Length: 408
Ligand SMILES: Cc1cc2nc3c(=O)[nH]c(=O)nc-3n(C[C@H](O)[C@H](O)[C@H](O)COP(=O)(O)O)c2cc1C
Image (cartoon, rainbow, N blue to C red; front, side, top):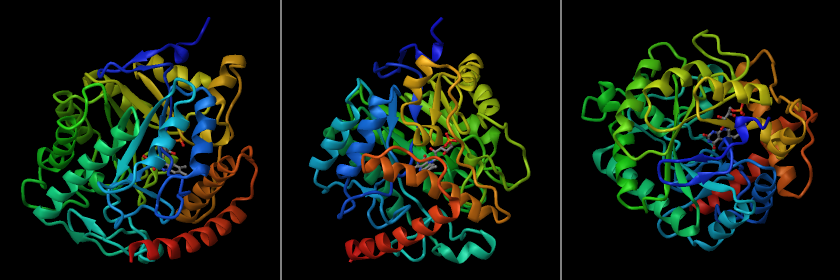
């Protein structure tokens, strides 16, 4: 019997996905000069397209070149040249695959060494203990800056559509700017954008509405959000439910549930508030509860690397299965599962005493696989975490210099 994981799936906008498996957003940090996508990224997406996932979601693309999650990131603004983005969309559509662009603003999660604007709903800096100084001091956004931000999300979505992407995903998870607005720990505002959950979600809802007014009805609009921040006093599961209920009234095609932030990396299975996540499919319990309330399709991402787990996700009433690490370790995992249901993707998790360093090393191991595929090589799953981390730091230093020239 064919697994339901491989059955096609229709979205509210009318798009047909060839199966229920999605490559979740992973920032490639592989831009060409000018913060543009180039041949390495095209090769990587061609590889994923051939690997059999029904949907590919790009790593986060910045709506403002003055605020980046990393120095090798990609920027798409109103005036950005479209040609390389057209090539990117084309490379990713090789196998009847849908390609969505994730769009993001980092807010306060900007490395101090990079420079640029560090904006947030309020001036609350990141607390990462002895690593806190690595990040910039945020400044509370004015109303003018909030309106400007909404326009930037709209401009980037319009350009993504013009370049041939099938949809966009608004990044409202992982402690970035929209997630900062949602969380009472970072949003201390006393205007219409702060306080109650109705106010904290206003910016996200306004962005969704504004994008929908400016793109075709067949263009997919998705949202990635936290099922919780996993920090005491943070955005919690009840808040998440209220946001989903409010989004029911808007034309949203998919809500992807993740969790955590730089302070509490739940998306990697580790929490700051001591709550325990499932060993695999970390957010399945939350996603299951939310799927009951949601009128749009729901996807969960985090810790999935075997077919049996993916099937369990669908059996619990969740519509789509998102995978990041597993598809970095094995870009053809969906195709492999069709042949052998027992194939398990390699885990990249590094467990050192220092949780922040472990998290960064895990990311470095995964990022190395993306770089290898960008060069046309195969992933190498057993690379040394410490060597990968050092290599990553050197690479980031060079890219930071290049980014500073771009900024100036
Ligand atoms: C190298 C790397 C980069 C990532 N970049 C993004 C990103 O740009 N946007 C995003 O929403 N999530 C990003 N994530 C998180 C993944 O989308 C996913 O939520 C997380 O890795 C958990 O899923 P997994 O266990 O299948 O990897 C990234 C993860 C990794 C490992």
